Length: 343
Image (cartoon, rainbow, N blue to C red; front, side, top):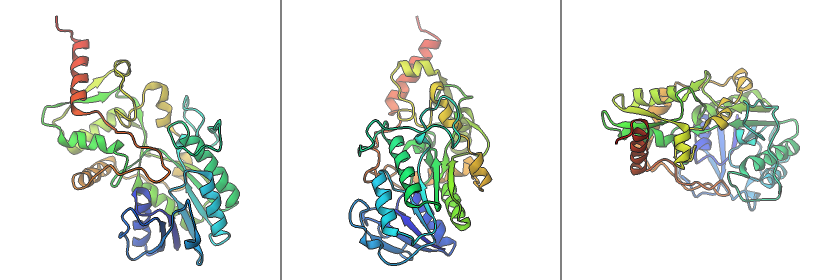
């Protein structure tokens, strides 16, 4: 296949490019030339800012265009105009944040978020999902009948620029034998995420099939709990660590922010975000590698590289993630005292 990747030098796009090249496909990367620009010398590199002049896309045709970097609907519209009918399939990487609510697990047919101001171009936690909804609509309009939309959950693994999942990996990797490590909420609470390499493989498989439609794409294939996640962290990285489960109400009362102060974890009121229905993606061939492999590979990468990169242009701002060691220690001490007060 001839594969055009919008991006291709960072995280998900990087994994798609690597897998496509390893499979023998012809790969073209459209990027600004600012992040890992020397990667993949065997690929064709076309340098452009998708917010500006797209004349770099003149000439050529591809079997698929995979878009990992669209945050605003105008970016999708200008891309559709630039490519015209030179790609028989367009793939948009969206997000499960497109849904209007998370009171119950969402299927692909669940109601979608709506922006009060559809012209907004500031990406925040409030606008991110609604903007992706508009991107999806622009994709369906500009690439009618030849559009595939993935709605991934939390994307994790090597080269993750957000530091969210990686915080847990680094926390257990540095834990001393016998050291207590905070474990948030309830062991039975649900957890979902997708290894970027598995998401990349799924997208390339859909390109080979010429698939269209919309799929929630997260994992693992079988339900995972926070307790199972913590157990896997211990078994893979530090079996002698001692998780201490700290109650949700206590954490929230202490001002601990789910998802950012304690990445991955969500309280009960938002737990359905980690129960998104993925039956459609599984039927379309989604396969998730063992959790231990993702943890080990992420730890190996995190131990040899800077793990938090600046936000992508136009992408959501990246606040600091994870508890600082001193704050975690203070929370654990306060929780122990709350459970067994010292007179």
